[in-house]
Image (cartoon, rainbow, N blue to C red; front, side, top):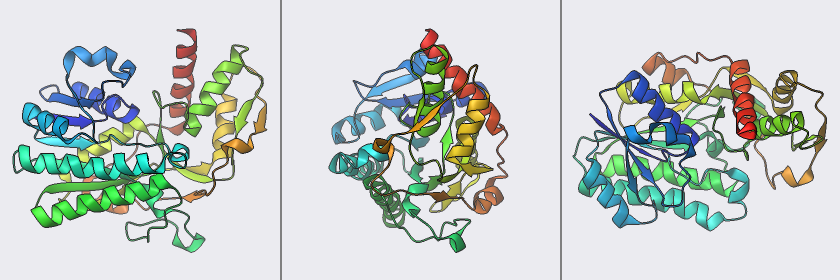
Length: 320
């Protein structure tokens, strides 16, 4: 069996590769990488996987990748995925996530076997700012995108739906809620706080810069996330879309308090208006019952462990 992971050098892609190698050792893993992408997250497994250089916006490279890898399953995780920067480069975000996904699906249609199974990873951001009486959020919730990133993920979601509908392709879509853990880039809130705390412990800064601490999120560990993605490919139905999320709901401020309790020194906090978004999504609590019925998946890793591992990851990076 051959599996192709786009975005294999990212946090989720690298953890997915780790999960497959540990739990399904007979699977041959292929990954799409851009020539300039750092490979830090996959250095420890680079000799065990097969990498293909390409880009979602370059159709020829995707066609070559499909022919060379001949995958049975594709996990499409690559994306322009940082919400704040999407306000700065909206056209690039749309081009990468929408046109890039269309390029990939077209290449798969033309150069892969007919029964290849494809996971297209959308996002809970597509639901935008919901009302209190719309909680928990189901897959039928109207789209109210509050960022160019959210718009791009709606486009990615819908082009995947359309390719499945029009060409009978075996495509499953997911809308993943907040997930984090070791290897998350420092721009994301949990990783940002953890890195700053590690820097304070080393005397490199004096306080943690924060934005809106009142936003409510439901958190999941990335290692539970990739296990969910594998179970989805095994057990879910083509053409369906699934919310996936953890079981720990709290404000960003409450999450920060747990992180502070893990620190080795006193942690001070200061609000930085530069971290506030032009428009924000402050209430994300998912209804994941459809996915759990289909797969039996449950998160296993306590959120406190996720935070501890993320903090230790940044401690290690700083000591390295």
